[in-house]
Length: 103
Image (tube, rainbow, N blue to C red; front, side):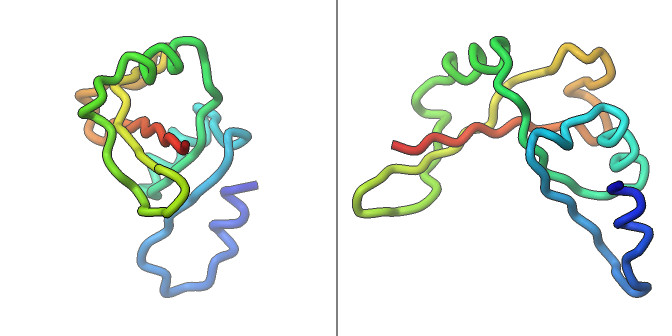
């Protein structure tokens, strides 16, 4: 479906970026997006391994996101490598995992 939607875009678009929820977190789709040089941000399901990596983040890794009177929003890059066996941190275009925190 994503391939069809992108193919239907009008001519003259120089850069395509995709944003999706965890339903789009599919290895084949992300591989195809990488091959097409299409930027993307896709939510990942919270696996026990990902949750463990987030919980282990030092306090100084969290960065302020938005100033709000009654809430704190922060984000951090997570040192996480999924166990799908096809992604490496030293890849030409490695995936980044970001966590957000709202309290």
